[in-house]
Amino acid sequence: MADAPSDSSEAPGTTPLVALSGVNKWFGDLHVLQDINLDIARGEVVVVIGPSGSGKSTLCRAINRLEPINEGEIKLDGTLLPQEGKALAQLRAEVGMVFQAFNLFAHKTVLDNVTLGPIKVRGRNASEAREEAKKLLDRVGVGEQANKYPAQLSGGQQQRVAIARALAMHPKVMLFDEPTSSLDPEMIKEVLDVMVELANDGMTMVVVTHEMGFARTAANRVLFVADGKIVEEATPEEFFTNPTSDRAKDFLGKILQH
Amino acid sequence: MQVLIDNFGQILDGFAKTLWLLLFSGTIAAVLGTILVAMRVSPVAILRFAGTSYINVFRNTPLLLILLIIAFAAPDLGFTYEINNYFNFFFMAATVGLGLYAAAFVCEALRSGINSIPLGQAEAARSIGMTFAQSMRSVILPQAARAVIPPLASTYIALAKNTSVALAIGVTEASFIMKKLNAENAVARWQIFFGFAFGYMVIVAFIASAGALAERSGAKTR
Ligand SMILES: Nc1ncnc2c1ncn2[C@@H]1O[C@H](COP(=O)(O)OP(=O)(O)O)[C@@H](O)[C@H]1O
Ligand SMILES: [Mg+2]
Image (cartoon, rainbow over all chains, first blue to last red; front, side):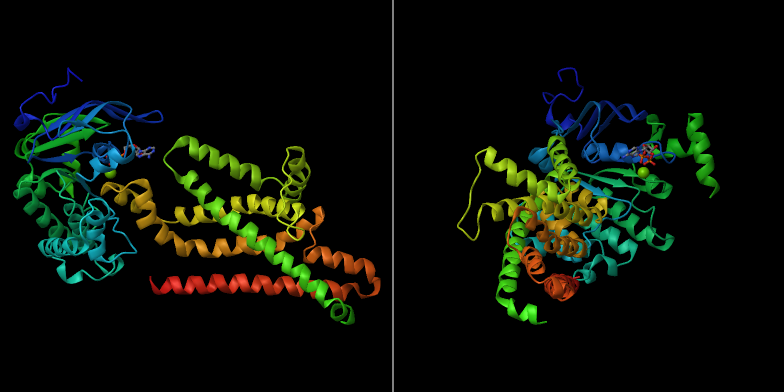
């Protein structure tokens, strides 16, 4: 612990909010995360890009320990991620997560989806939680849908509810795993707009996405991941106009053709 | 027909005992099956292993064997508990054996319901900081409840019929009475068989309609 760069003896302002050091993970023989070192500062927006199967989702999910890692350490705001149990649950409440498949609670209304965490996990009073949930739903533009069930909403609306559900926990950092990949093209923008606004409000974000427009407008940094390694790290401008590695050049060539 | 009318009192007594067996063993199965399924889906490896081992043992052993083992081994181990002459030791042994056996099937019925809920639901629950128990209670079980009813009804229907195995250790439930009447009235056998089959069909029909009712009331709340 003493040799970790993110040692909590540093001044609080300089502690990275998320710090991964020497992280390795295997799925059987497959080395999905290979010696990952990554510090994310408070308020920073990091876009993770790379070919399918390169380990982007696993990296994202490791940060709230939906995937446990085999080696290395991950710290959130200077605290090592707990192994399991109540402490881990409490820590996860500090990390918002938005999934590709939305994963809204199918048996609950939109409003109840957003209030469930604040009431059950934070012990908030129900009417207060509902008031705040309504404000959040208005903020992401789905206030009208509060009493509907997820299945009655479009994909874009569901994903915005999912963002509101995560925000209701007042997370320190938000993880997005390909949030627009299962959306029809006309709905992608409505979700990205919410995310850009969130970035502008100073939220710390890790976003796995191939949306270059979003990366250019909102990201401070782009990580290019291939075969479980961070191959290249640059500002969006640098990365998209002048990638250095062959893997990145090849990959960008492919996605730019579409 | 006459033989059924003449012995109606005995037949009713037999079915009463069948229902007591069903009630007691069904309760054991419900409680134990719920504990087992919690173990089988829990994040703790040793609990999962213990739960799985239980299922493998009890689902793969013939029910008759389980009842015989309990009836003969329990007294050797000093267990001879009985409530009274009606709920005697053999009744208790049959109840426990049926309950232990059916618990394995209740567990698997519940687990199939839980597994029918997409993994993303549990992940979303965990990602907002819910503990395992909270995500089960608030997210998984309410959604699994409907999916669970048909296999659970089948399990209880099978249990109702399986109570007849208790005759092997001398519990005077319906099938025991049937066997006795058959021995005493060789000429009226098919009438006796159909009479008792009808009795079991009534019990099964009750369980099936309770299941259908539960499923429909669940449908209203989505
Ligand atoms: N639960 C799992 N078990 C085994 N292999 C997995 C599992 N999840 C992902 N993988 C494998 O790990 C690799 C990285 O997966 P993932 O992180 O989902 O990649 P990406 O999000 O970049 O497409 C892939 O080869 C995938 O098949
Ligand atoms: Mg992925």
